[in-house]
Image (cartoon, rainbow, N blue to C red; front, side, top):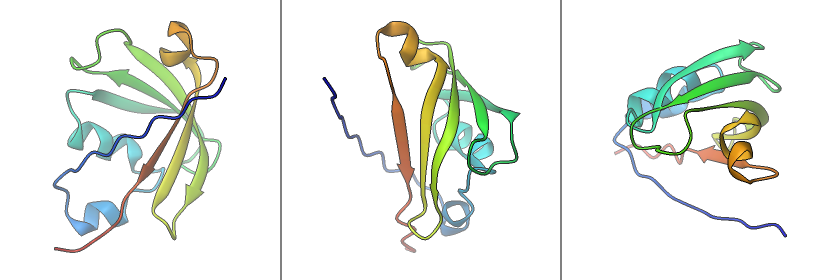
Length: 110
């Protein structure tokens, strides 16, 4: 049975950071805007484009998962949207058969 959960998080990041939030910059942006959730991100394979594999090490706000590897599976720059699929560890180790996260930035200037 497939389930979907949606969460929206508002962060105070300028338009420049939003516009640069491609897969290549994901490893720098997420730890900066959510340091207690994402401790650090490393590129394991690829150049930041589709199929790039990242290693996410989680921070103090994530109690039951220390790390997970994710592959960039969707990249739509016109929508400022990135889709990541867990390929090892993390949510797959706690009972999920599949886990995908989508990040989208509305890029609204204030």
